[in-house]
Each structure stands twice: as C-alpha cells, then as structure tokens.
Length: 88
Image 1 (cartoon, rainbow, N blue to C red):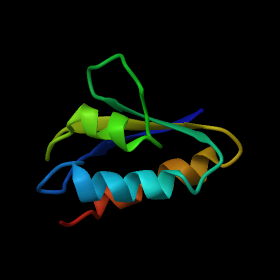
Image 2 (image 1 turned 90 degrees about the horizontal axis):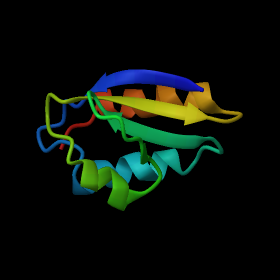
Image 3 (image 1 turned 135 degrees about the vertical axis):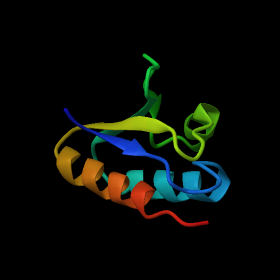
Image 4 (image 1 turned 30 degrees about the horizontal axis):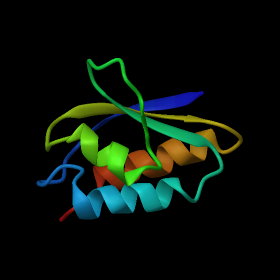
C-alpha cells in the first residue's frame, strides 16, 4: 500500500467539479483508491463521487490518499498532483 498526505488548495474544496475530476482520474488506475480526512479513522472509496463528496473536504483541510494494487505509486502521485494543482 502506498499513501501520501495532501492539503486541499481549491477554493471550493473537493466538491462537485473537483470531486468529479478526482474520481475520473482515480478510475483510470487498476489499484483500489481510498481517501481519508486527517484525524478520521474511516477510509472512503476514492473512485466513488458520492463517498468523496460525503467527506466534504474544504480548502485547507488535510487528507491522505491511499492506493493498493499494481499501479499504486503512480495512482497516489497522480491524484496528489491533481489535488495540489486544482483551480476552480
């Protein structure tokens, strides 16, 4: 399993359009992808728009992206890069 802590920089957080972009990119990887809000013990499915939006990650919040599978490193790096560069 590979993981990386991220900080949400997008002004609207991971809602609607940014969440859709995250899920679309996550779906391109074979690995299982999860995201977890910092301080919360529950991992949410990073390939599910409903689960991602339910987290309600706002600008400035920290979270960890996890991936497990054959392309886990590439998945985590690509998704962390996406979140770091999201502009609404």
